[in-house]
Each structure stands twice: as structure tokens, then as C-alpha cells.
Image 1 (cartoon, rainbow, N blue to C red):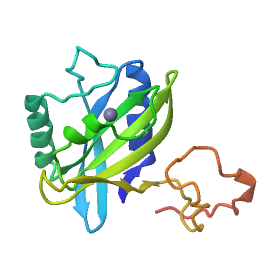
Image 2: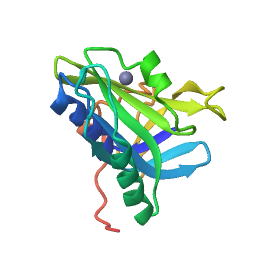
Image 3: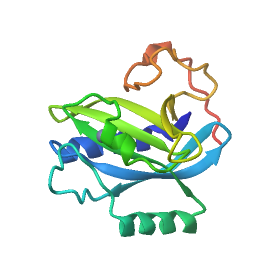
Image 4: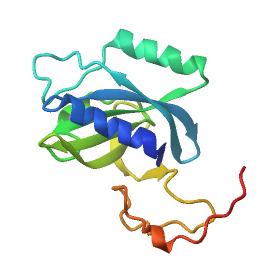
Length: 179
Ligand SMILES: [Zn+2]
């Protein structure tokens, strides 16, 4: 499972809208927990691939090293990568698979249609080596959406998290206690 806050989720989707019709890309810093890649921050990376930036993405090695160092200083690992698919589905391509080398990391893809972010999917790079690596569909859990003390809203949508689904009148009276 990929866990991230609504703020980070929105930020990486917005990045794809900003760079449309080109791809965006970035790195997810966080912690590896049992069965969970917990994202703490999303770092934007420049798309250095100018030959066909609309359908390829690339993070320069020196930039990746810099981001990795940045994470280490904060006690965070690189737990994933994200990029956008302008006017293409949020599914990994053969190129995405060939260029994925970080076993155990999440590869997040957002489809951006006509400049608007649509579906966001995550794929876990499973396996042990470059020879048996494979992408597995990975559930995305966006935290911070639920009001404390209330049961979670319907989880049926799973991968997509559209804001504004909760009806304010269904909420009980707020308690005045602070934290
Ligand atoms: Zn791709």
C-alpha cells in the first residue's frame, strides 16, 4: 500500500497539470514500513529529457543523488517515483518498466487529460533482481481525509480520491475540545 497525505497527493497531480502537455516527474521520500510505503514528501524533479518530453521522463542521476541526500538528512528514504501521462491512461508503459530499477519502490502515474489530472495509479516494483522484477498494482491510501472519531467514508472508490464527497450535514456537532 502507498500511504500519502491529501496535500502530497494533490501536489503531485497538480505538478502534472502544470507541465502539461509535457510529463512531470518527481521523487517520493518517506519510510518503508511492513507492507506500506509511507510518503512524507514529494520532491519535484526537472524533466531532462528534451527529445520527447511528452512521452518520456528522466531524472538526472546527479539530481537523484541530491534528493537522496536531502532525504537522508531528514531520516527519509526514496520510497517511490511519480510522473504523468499527458493524454494517456495511468498505466505503466514498456519504457516505464524498462527504466524502473528500484525494487520495493512505488511508481505513481497520473493521467492528465487536456490539462486536467484524472486517474492516479500506483505500481509496486516487486521482485528481487532486475531479472525477475515486475509491476504489481498497489492500493493508494490518502490520509487526512477522515474526520477524527468518525468511521471512514465509503472506501469503494479505492484508487481515486476526489474531494468534496462528504456531506457537511451528515457530520455530528463538533466537539469543542482541542488537542
Ligand atoms: Zn510513463
